[in-house]
Image (cartoon, rainbow, N blue to C red):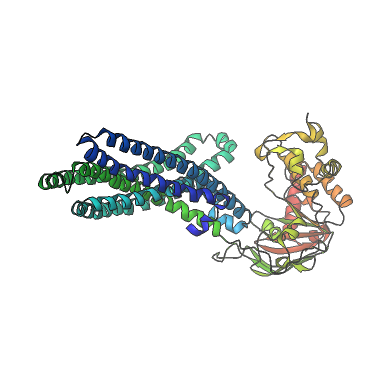
Length: 578
């Protein structure tokens, strides 16, 4: 995992190297200070040699300034490297998500992906910044200070050998208890994001059903779970500070007692007062380093779950990939379904589509009717290879869609989904999603075909009118017509309308269909609709039920042969005449 995440450093690698190097310089200078203090006490203060005090004092100030300079430089480099690492990591994760197909998205869920791109990356950023500084400082401080202690007195050094193992065992137990809690917290964050996302997207529904209190309770419950877990974890980790303080005080007391005895017994020659003063400083450095090291362990423990979750996203392999030698040109809009079966996952108990076989010539207009859950949308999503068939094949232009380059295939297919999506920006910017290089004349022509030009011109800013996120400042019918115009700008060989005229009136619907017949006769048009009127003039109508095509033919043929089609037709006509 670390190796994979480290790829996101890239141009910030140098800063990530310089930060620990500067930290080493800071630690080295700090460890030199106790030795200078010992010289000031033993060779300056005791004999009253002020020149030694001044000389060693200057060295002391110089070491302190060097230590400060190295420390500041290390902090700056670490901040630069950590923020850059987080930026690149988010970039890599986002672009990985762009390669996902629908199955990958379903596997992680939208809320979980959002959490991984935000909360998880923020935690990894803090951990990385701490690691390249504290993870270097702490062990180096302990090692260098311990070496100096051993040089001063191997006997007093034994105190640390007794205390440190006990301290390490205590820290290990704390980390072992805390990790499962932190792992659970980040899964709860996914649930929290999911509630917030649902609430914001469904705000109109929440208010219309007066469910604000219920939604507030859901949020409070999940937020409370996060609070309880963090409180529990912090209560456990609260033992870290007293554990470290106890170790510090035990060492100081033991060194004071044994060191004083050594000074008295040696007559302040073998072990001096200055040595004892420096021992106290080394003790603080060693155990202070261990205390910071324990904080690093806590942060690493906290980041294990985000690291794993981020790694999962970065290494997720899309199920739909380009073949080794892809076909890069789609000849025409002919479509063939040959004995197609499809299920959304291998674990699914039944097929979503069963035994689909149909041929559609290029340029045909095909209507698709069926009740809710009859897999109409699933059928058309196989054409641009948003999913792969479980059995059989789907061909476009006589070539299996699995043999095409994905970009080439999807550039030749335009889909207007039932749930239309517009992005924040001007109308022009939204239309140019269909063709980034479209001229104003081409946009106007596409909008006229989609019966959108007139209402766009009625806006004060016309085509420069700003569209709010999700298209909240236009009506459902206007949104559908803008999405149709956007699809037409692609000049596709296949145009798929997935119940995308449901919000427009029947007269506008008829105008759009007439424009399609006259203006884009060479484009294969697949129209999923609930209204028979939207498809009755199609060259071929498919009637679906339970994931199967139960009838096919023209309007006249189906009126003679299909009981389902007759029932829908008469129920809609009677409803229209009542």
